[in-house]
Length: 316
Image (cartoon, rainbow, N blue to C red; front, side, top):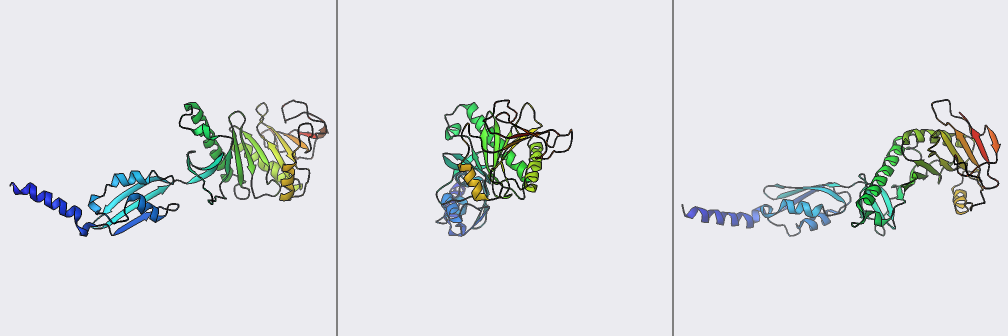
């Protein structure tokens, strides 16, 4: 009986050092953004260690420290195979914080965008700064920043599922804790490329439905949209639209318009205010009907407008 413990010890040593159990095969799945070679290096498998001597949990923890890897599962398959299954983070947008960071669908920045990396299909989120996510930032500040990012991603989600998703891309979403979210339109409808859409907070689907009416009407009349305000808190049924001075659908002209934005006191683009667009009280109104008059600053604000502004009011 005294020989039994000794036999067990020697048996254990043999198994742990046996070439028979040396890792000969490694299967890696779910690695779209992490090369297999990098996975093997992180896991410490380059030299083919003994399969039974591997600490599976330690390998999983090491892999999950990689910015792309959200979850890792490592399993033994006797006699000589190791299976590594990865779940990668899926980037939903690029967060501009001075440098640019990829943001996952939970609104968490997980990786800095390095020189040479390109993600042309991802919208850009602006309006926050790096200090909003700093480890020593106040808890309420970090929570607010994360909430704004998540809400911006919700706006993008509504957009993709809505009437515009198939033919107009979101180029940028600006986040503001006081005024809510605004969207800059990317490529797609040449009558609205580069236009800024002020959504404010909440009721996104209904606002996008109204926006569809505005853009469709502008397209029909050959007008190019510069700005749409759907964020009137006092009168949610009021929509303000500003068109570009050059009515031709020319992206280069759009860029020139952006560069030559009017300074205070030099309003250049006509503003059209539409009452109750898409409201339940009646059908959407046209953009050309109504009474032209000199009137006030930001739509619905009641402030005095710079001389030369053109306003049209439409009631549904």
